[in-house]
Image (cartoon, rainbow, N blue to C red; front, top):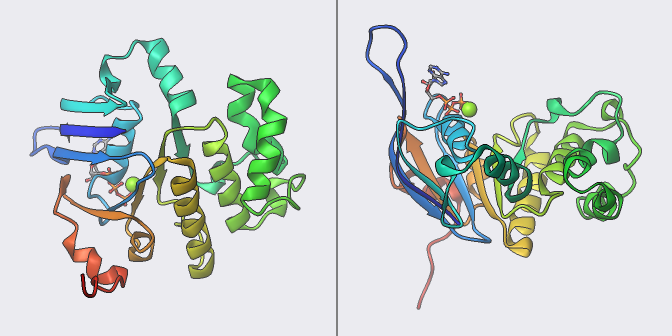
Length: 236
Ligand SMILES: Nc1ncnc2c1ncn2[C@@H]1O[C@H](COP(=O)(O)OP(=O)(O)OP(=O)(O)O)[C@@H](O)[C@H]1O
Ligand SMILES: [Mg+2]
């Protein structure tokens, strides 16, 4: 579904050494696979997600989505890719103040398929546990509920690839577990490829695979598997 080949993005500020935000990174994510991109602050997570979304151009390398190179798309194709194929789970503070949950979650469908908005969003919000919160306004929702509205917005157009940048950053431990379990189930049930950037080891627990990022490169991910608490397979 998603394939990154030798992706490089350096930032040059002034005369000094360039910042190697993404530094020759290759990875693949299959349909229905939940991959946690685990790395400390400054390791290049957000830059990588922006490259995958086609919002930034790499210095070199390729992002293939379903075999198509994101950086060879026309402007129109790139818009269509971001609106239909891609779901981006943003931070809950991006919800529109004063708007109802159902309105906030409908924003993408209002741009792409107005007639589908009502019939799609209500059951989606219900599946996300917000059936009783459809008409609550942003301020009337808890942070966990707002995060779930963001998830509904990202999933509303039936994307095949979902990117999430610290989606649980503002949640407590219990809400974090809930949201991560939900994301994992949605990803598996809908066959969505999910890439979740985080520096929270708890988030890594729920992923099918953990890729650890350091200074713009993957380290192999072994360090976090210990934290994940998964017992090693016993027997054969
Ligand atoms: N527009 C930019 N210009 C120059 N340097 C940048 C720019 N954006 C990011 N950087 C630098 O690139 C590196 C990677 O940044 P990035 O935002 O991708 O990290 P991150 O892993 O998302 O960090 P965090 O966990 O804090 O969000 C950092 O050293 C950052 O300072
Ligand atoms: Mg970041």
